[in-house]
Length: 620
Image 1: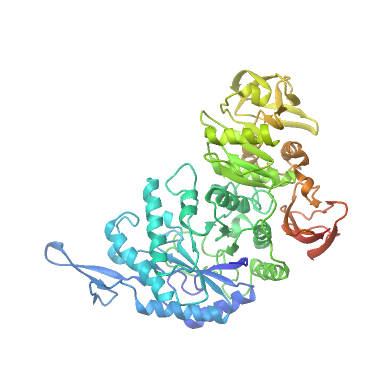
Image 2: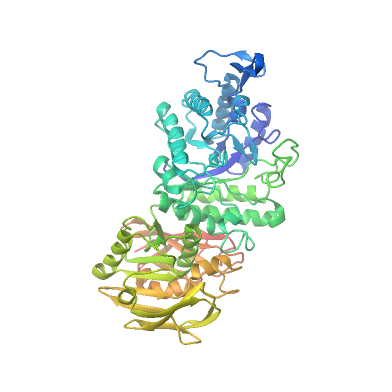
């Protein structure tokens, strides 16, 4: 796919999850008319597993199983029958043809068993383990192949999605089972159609822990997906969601997935849960900043949850919870809400933007052992604020070649694999790279040689005031080392004279050591990334960066406005400056001498509105 996908997830406005049973072409046409007016060009759509494979089990004397039957009329099924309801297939095909009339492409979430807090399994399979049970596997194989066979000739289907958050189908503790099930699904799809990419569609993946791993999904699927709401799972519920933290975390999580999984990533679902945690204008701002951030940082697309309002529906899952009822781009009268109006403006913005190549990255963030996401997210935001961009990688392989590396919040006995650490040190000593290590109680070999410091012991941390060249920062480390220099240049000490920040010459390169972890402190702290309300942690990263940012033709002088640049050709870049904050901010950048700036979206000489950005072509 060569274009950025913009759209929404779709259940119809009258029936929601019951739309296929209660098929109403008039409703679909009215819905898509309203969504077209909002600028939607891509829909993620969900064939309800219960409805598309309505198989039952019939029992006889002493409750012995006799045979499978099909549908409400319990029709006879031949042994080779896949259980797919042809009526539902025709309804889906009709839906796809209507979507094509409105110039809308489709992602099909094939196995929609879990949806919005409710399970929808075929009657014959209810109560069984939907991941590991062999009978379920048999019918799932028939279902997937049957759906793909029946729909593969529809040309506006451009992605096969495994299903909706299928890691919510069952509690799975065995990583190998999760891998094997995903491979089973992917292979079933590809055995019928190998022409379209397959997206993962999973919810809340991990690396190093849990059964459902980012790296496994990346190995098996073509596109990784995040569903980043303002939720505790991404540390997005700590402060209002239209300020820098929650506005940047969706991109950070997506780049975390892409870096670990090695595949492109898209924001496949995003909403705001309810108006209780932010009004409708905030929701519009949230969509705007996330669309431009996703585009500028090379994500594959952005889909809102959900297209339609479901406020009046009374069946489960809408009867169970309040956070799925009023998330539409349009209201119950099909009039665009502020977020729908903003979707249209974002579509208009994208239509004027040029193709964008890979953005420049300046450092590799190698995630040490421990909770990976929060380290990645903290380092990602701080580096953006400091004016450079990172690539996220794991601690188990040979890291990519780079002029700079970050090991954030090293912890425990097994900080990294030896091969990873040795490769980083080789880049520092022999190739002139620089390395930043931030400390969270981790153990290091050759500590004195690498850091130029010697340890007089470790102790539980307490609150300190560090004195940096740019000012003072109060911090509370989990653990701290009592340090003396044996060659390192001391860059900051605390009120006790203990070394907080240092730089050591190591071969051709440099090692910076920080005696606490701003990544974890900032991400756990309310407004931790807002220097107007907390410590300017990003300035530590900025001091480490030094000349890393010299390649940028435009630099931001505001930590709430962050810059990416992508090379267009030898003599020009596409530069995006995004205001991730909830206030209008003046953008007073530094422009490299000898370069001319052309406005593509937004105006350089005016303040950037809150949660918005500008796109520039900068030519030599």
